[in-house]
Length: 180
Image 1 (cartoon, rainbow, N blue to C red):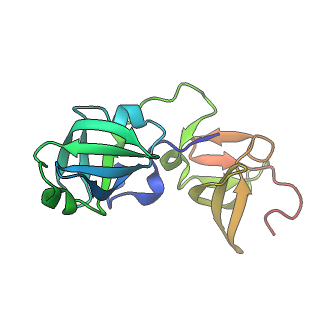
Image 2: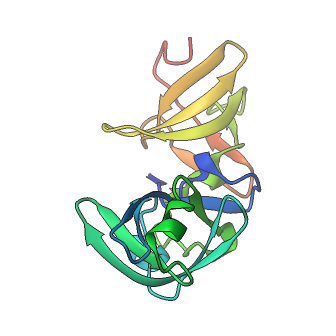
């Protein structure tokens, strides 16, 4: 139900940016770097000519990109040797939320759309607030801040029958004991 997409849990300080990758070590001598991808849209985010902002505020245009052993090898414009590539290591790469593609499935949501929503019961009673979305192997989980502390709620139709973005809420129908 949740679209991992460009992961909002690791924003770069502004609510309008989402991390799409992290620069790793240099590869070779000609300025290529490894990039660990943090987006469901790698072909769009890491296309030749795409521009990404690093966490130091610098904009990098992609000159070349190719897959390599589970990561991407990327060369950015102006990064022509290993020494320049070393300087980029460890920086995150982000895009503006406005640049995210529209989701065509009405049951798909970006993490940032869910974070901050009020969680209410079927009767409208306040249950908490969605702090973040965790992408677990079995299912996505909503992390709720409640009066009793943090609660993990499986983000499945049976437990979360309604997401009302316009109303700023998610409706939960949790089984007995889930929120205790």
